[in-house]
Length: 193
Image (cartoon, rainbow, N blue to C red):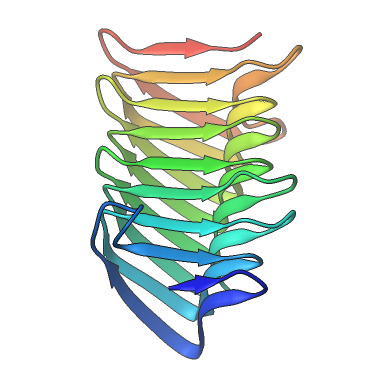
């Protein structure tokens, strides 16, 4: 599904999407401004590619809840791009890749289970203006430029992988003005610059 000048999939109410393929010849959802958008968005499985290609684009966005099960590639890596955004955001990144320019995952209440790569090249990786809960398994990576994870209430239930921020004076886990609870397991690395 290609929309080079707009939105690939849009629903006024609930959008439920399963995207299967290699992300090149099959299983490709690509819009310039939005890949998938709706009041509620449920991506029940993605093995292909879901993307927004324009500046300030959003690959998956909802005004309400977003649930994503990803083992493929989700990206919005043009200037100002956000890969996944919504009010309540639940992401299971099962060996997949989620790339953004400004943010990879953004919401009010955010829950992330990551066994893949969540990477942002200019902004931060995972942000919440409420509560963010993260599990990061061995070999997994959450990497941002300005921060890895940020919110007023951060709970890293377990980290056996890598949580990092790579920009100058950046913070891997930022709960400034709030609380952070971190369970860093053997082999886990949390690194700021």
